[in-house]
Length: 376
Ligand code: GMT
Image (cartoon, rainbow, N blue to C red; front, side, top):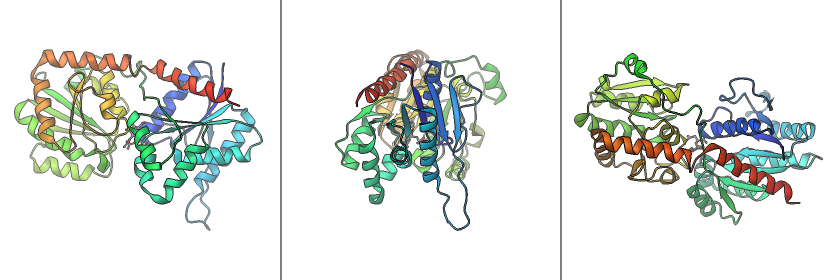
């Protein structure tokens, strides 16, 4: 059954925007008609795709109001597109505000459609602690026809925090295996001045406090003493200045490359030997999966959804938040043993092709769509 699916997400926000867009692209490839209803073109929608349509939510700034009415404009656009395009369902990413907008759109519209809401983490683990929003999140979930979360841990945390009995299905994140795969990049290593005998550690994030990039630098300072290596830092955000200061303080400037935001992550991962993801909050850790797809084992923190992505001692290692000695010990162990590294790299790639295989994840979403549509 080919469906007409509306998708709303924050088009510029990290993982949730990436997942929403990649899902839309795969659904379109499978013959569904996909309508993105967003405030700007999602950054991964970088060319014309058959079966994909884009409806811009134009948020006007009115001088009388302090805040532009994004949520209301989005709700109104959702109602208009749902009716005009005869959408079967709206798949919204984030309970607040996107599910709330979809609920309002449904009430406004005389065209009937279903609402599927995916929780990504920040909407629950940050907003869920705000009592004024908790009730709204519960309402958003309970009024959605189906709610999914990107990890079992996020589903559990949501139940605990929001006190709802609404069932939440876990549907894991995925990557596009055609893009995220190991490629030959010896030229790139040379370009960045990385010697053939040097190991490369990589960290990619939006440099928010929760990502604990300082722990990445502190761990690397310990690793560098034992292994001839470089640290590649990708991304930009509030902690960047502090991180630069720390690199100076540890006198490791010659070994740390700050590359800012980058588009061709798969190539940078392909020149790396180990990825560090040392966040204190992470509902899934899509960047870990991206690394694993490129044959890069990951050392991650034992929090949130990370243990569902990294299997300790198989495709990476887990350490407690802030335990930089643990991170350094495992990193040195892995980087000094080529055979062990090769084994971990291959297990990492295998996990991506099995548990997180994109087609099976999209099929899980399709099954949910079919179920909600069949329910009266
Ligand atoms: O991690 C971020 O700061 C961005 C955030 C987002 O909402 O895009 O990422 C969340 O959703 C991703 C996709 O499902 C997950 O892989 C990230 O783990 C999650 N981030 C947090 O929970 C902090």
